[in-house]
Image 1 (cartoon, rainbow, N blue to C red):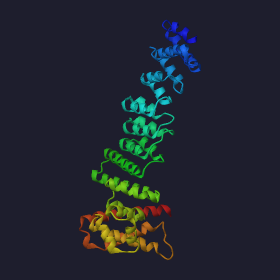
Image 2: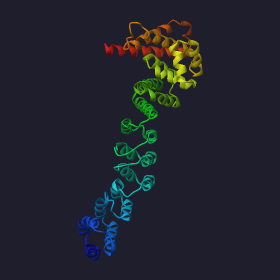
Image 3: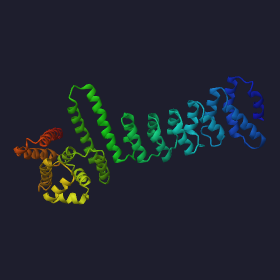
Image 4: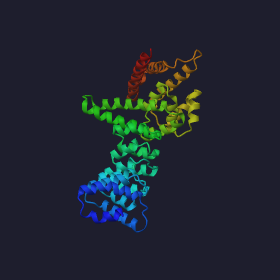
Length: 376
């Protein structure tokens, strides 16, 4: 009977009266049995409220029904098609939507719709993938911040591709347990690119000098990431670095000099398209001829082979020291010895490639000296 009385009152009631009645009527609807003639009248009243000209009435209705599985589906659909501030309430909370409906809102709705859906209590893998593919920046940030969202590595990578230059996106991505190694590599390189732009806009240094500095920083970051990664993830990291064209002779030489032989071995195996065990055997057993063949097959510069060979030999000898290696000082010892061996080859100093290696070796030696000084 409550709803029958309201039908006659609805047309003449003021906005203020309808606002005051909306919440009570929604609660009464949820308590009613919603069957027979009374149920039809109740549904008609609620449907009328969903079309009420007062925004506040519709907002109250949205709040009342947003979490309710017993809410009338057609009313929820009507509210979802309403103004963004009303639609967002039901899109972010209603359990009546299936993924297909939500994905359609993500694809065709306003940014507010995307954000609301990204912040739902539970976001499926498929829905998260849709948001990652077409969602606006704020929607993707909401998704990454949502502990109830299940995200596949592919969706995380897609967000990194689209919005990896945004600092908040990077921060949230790095906290994701499902973040793939290749996405880490992508984000490291994106950050290096951002730094390059910032430095170029504020610095009087030549562009080439800035690019070299930032390439060094990127190489250091990639090597540090690889050093901290689980051994089983290293092939994926190497594959990502190679695929992005960043597995350069400079990065590999830096890896060897700082002691990340695993990264060097995996990188050489990937570039030469041979098994890791074959590379590891050549490095461990001092098989210089085999190492040279693998090195050439990897397409690394001919003029740099002696430097790599010296560095590997130095590590092998220091690790075999009967008194036990001084692991802290080893990068310093290796870089100094390799640099000394380089200086003993005066006939190669006119080679431009070797000049670049000299610059890098001196830089690595200086870095190793600073690191050693900090530890003492």
